[in-house]
Image 1 (cartoon, rainbow, N blue to C red):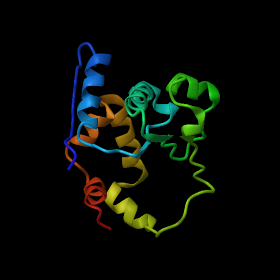
Image 2: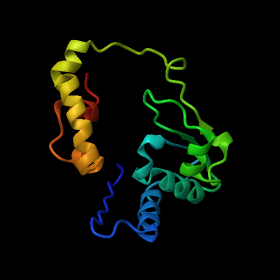
Image 3: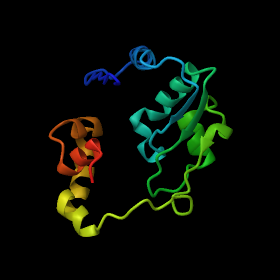
Image 4: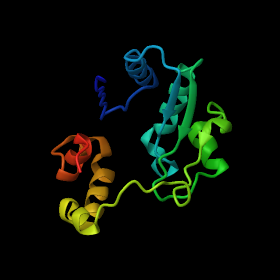
Length: 158
């Protein structure tokens, strides 16, 4: 089981050295990696440090086949400028998989809208939770008091 790693530096921010140390600790949990898919958020979350984290992981995983697929959700694929700002010249473009969510998904099942509204609180609650995450930080919002939907997703139920 993966050990969860947390580091909070609210006053001065997390340094590059601290981040690299945490990523070393993360990677030390897995030996013999052959193939890795890194799934950072897309450029709309450019201040998440995910681009830097991806660059560091890509570099530390030298010798391992690494692909990167941005979690676009329903956003448009990143432009070349956004890719450059996010991944620099560290992640080769041929290692970036673009998820064409409108055309390359396979339907595995169906969850009725009524059920989603019941357990999530509907559109208003989703909008409020997104705003809360933007204000206080996604990691803090997700870590505290999981919702029924989050618990079900974590448990693999439904």
